[in-house]
Image (tube, rainbow, N blue to C red; front, side, top):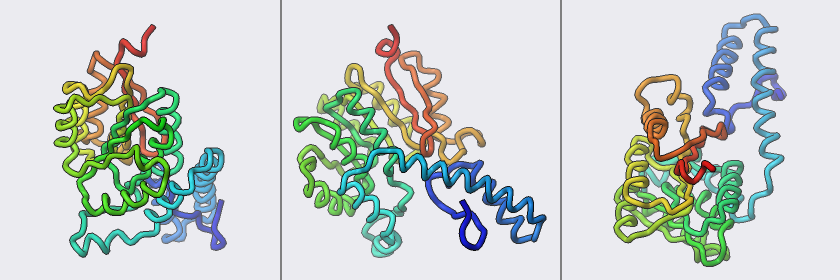
Length: 274
């Protein structure tokens, strides 16, 4: 898939893939240095294959709800530097959104598990929270947390435009503090989706497993388990620390799913073995 000028398009979820990024880097360098046209053409076609695969995946996933589509478009088009300059929030960016394909996977996981209580750690513009709320029964609840009061004002209004808004409870504060408070309240969750501060993933895991947040037969899903490739290309990354911790934990079984930027699914060992 090439543009009218002969260059493959940039962007999309594959920008997190280090293989894709390296191909783009080499392609751009080859164009700049006027390296053999055959090489640049082959590189361009290889990049185009990656782009086409993403488009194909998107096409063959179910259509998102109207409100989810509105959230996605709003998130992608908004200039997030403006509220940051005004001191209304910290640094935010469209790439922090879960997005259509992973959002649909979350809905599948939640519905297959017949989950009723969900914890969404890292709300941003609310795509994951609403996607999962759409998959649970009317009496279900999604507690979604974030540090940004600015996002609560935007998201509460949007959530309440849907019949699922009543299921969504927004908690503002640092994720670990919110999780500890929920544990103190005796709350347990059938499905926990973690997509907040990656430097704190190990802390989040320990709180979930040691403070009783995970209900019987529950599932934890950690987003960005690849962290743009740093998990397996460099030593000491926070996401690799999480993956190694889970690997050594005899209480659980896990599977690392290569969707988007990696999704680590974790369940108690006794609940996955016959």
